[in-house]
Image (tube, rainbow, N blue to C red):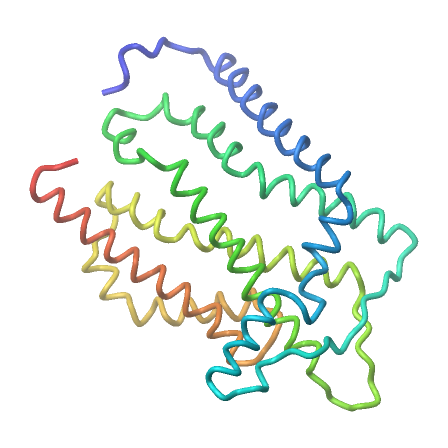
Length: 271
């Protein structure tokens, strides 16, 4: 049953309401994008280009791990490449593009909250209760995924590509736009893929899927996960592929646990 308090709205009223939600969302993205644009050194030197230097946090931790485990080859002493800008407008357009991406990532929780405010009044009471806490968990999973992409997947992929040599006479000179494209693709893709447990949880709440079905499809899911991992990873080495596939598989198993918990609560007559 719909919320009785919610007054009837015409189609044009809904469009007007949606327009203001989108305007506020876009305004938030623009505000953070402008802040990112004005802090060029922090945005590029300290964040975007940080994985290109051997003193990046991930490389330091891998070096520490290598010393503890007796694998000193895990240490990254230097990056065997340079980044070049090959187009006249390259640096300027990159500055604008990355500023917008940064604004979108930072403003994502607010943007999703605005969208959710538009969707929620149209839900039935049961649907609203099922999706309670959606803004918080979607935001947490998105930010966790982007952090994984930035601190784990991107630097490891970059290091592999920088040290992959078909002939020692060939020098790696990566194009700026190519590097930016790789970093943003990996980070944003991980942010979206980490929504898997939330998707499974909601579908289980609506009894669309069951834990038993997810368990039966476990082998098929592994194949799908490997295919997705192969598509989004810029490298062809098995290590990087497994580095992406393993978290996805863990997220899938987490989704199974959540679905099982939902079924138990539903069997007990709880929400």
